[in-house]
Image (tube, rainbow, N blue to C red):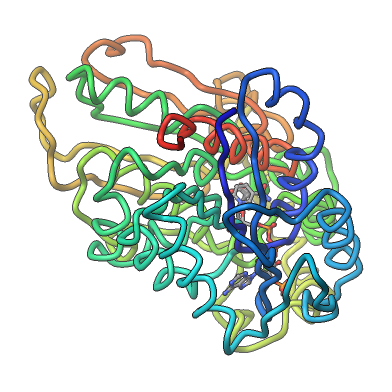
Length: 389
Ligand SMILES: NC(=O)C1=CN([C@@H]2O[C@H](COP(=O)(O)OP(=O)(O)OC[C@H]3O[C@@H](n4cnc5c(N)ncnc54)[C@H](OP(=O)(O)O)[C@@H]3O)[C@@H](O)[C@H]2O)C=CC1
Ligand SMILES: N[C@@H](CC=O)C(=O)O
């Protein structure tokens, strides 16, 4: 039986769902000859870890208890040490994580899974890749910060998976990798890459107030912890950057044109998220409704669109251009176009390459939500099983 030790960073909506998927897939994985062994879990304040990372695991009762207390909004710090597991507070937690990565990375291997929404994990991720660990990400921030951090993380290509950072559970990165490795250069991607903004746009089209549908998207698990990350276009821009870098683009977030759906005066530095949702957003209900009506009078609908385009004009040979034009923002589109027909939290990507020149390769389906995102993370973990003894 292949044994995959796993350490999870982040135990929010996606992290908890991942733990539940792991538990419910135990017998399926056993039939496939694989066992996932959760050795540690971190939240923003603490780490809970099994007392013997080589032989033991946080058993399913502990995992259920972790999910229960995190769902109630408590910290992992509220758990107590016992013979089976130990709890470390933030000060010691990161050092302990590095120690575990050092011990397991070079022996049994360790799948280091980032389901946080934080850029604070970048430092530890850079350390653990050097210690021989595999990295699986739902968190987009580590791959959308500096090129130096990006290059570091992807330097061990076979040991990193990040399918869920773009399109949640959709096979976007895997499909692009297949095309790239067969020498089929991709020159354009256009799509709707935000489950939240897809849902918001199709609901406001049905006459619902903007502020209400944003709150609904949050409660459905589609938004980032602060929905302003979605509404500012930043979350889509991060996805665009991850895709552009995968295609060979050497670029940063500041080279992407981003349209925000709220003004700077309502940003995270100015007002708390609760205030924004309750008092800030409703001030924009009318504006958005006007834009929807205006588009509708022309037979069109509003969609938040991401365009990534190779700035060079030669697409017949397999080259890796260093710059892509990227922009993300609202477009008025024919109601009957592929993007116009999109409903709810579905994402769609049209990928144009030499092989898919006239008719693009189209990937479409649920693009957000804890279930599908965690399933994508789990599939990534299973995908690296051959690296474990
Ligand atoms: N929901 C979706 O549809 C999709 C989400 N994603 C990505 O998945 C990630 C998780 O999203 P979601 O579960 O909704 O987010 P949540 O806010 O629900 O959970 C985030 C978790 O990360 C923990 N955390 C914060 N900082 C750190 C840190 N420095 N070290 C370790 N843990 C930390 C938080 O701890 P605490 O509980 O203490 O606050 C919390 O448990 C995000 O990056 C998101 O972009 C990707 C694709 C789709
Ligand atoms: N907040 C994101 C979640 C997935 O990345 C979205 O709405 O698409």
